[in-house]
Length: 79
Image (tube, rainbow, N blue to C red; front, side):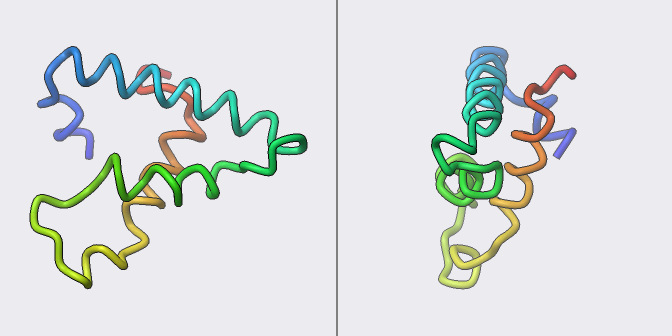
C-alpha cells in the first residue's frame, strides 16, 4: 500500500489526502450522523480501492473497506 501511494500522481495524492481528512472529520461526529469509520469505509472502499480486474470474488472482498478504514482512522496520508 505504501508503494502504491508513493507512485500516485501528486494531484491524486492531494485529493485522497483531502478526502481522508474530510471522512475522518465526518467519523468524529458519528454520534449525530451514525457514520462511524467502518460505515464510511464500507461505502467508499469499493469505489476508491476498486481492483483493475473486477471479479465476483474481488467485488465481495472486505479488504478495500478494511484498508480504507485504517486510512480514515489516521485522518491523513501525512500524519
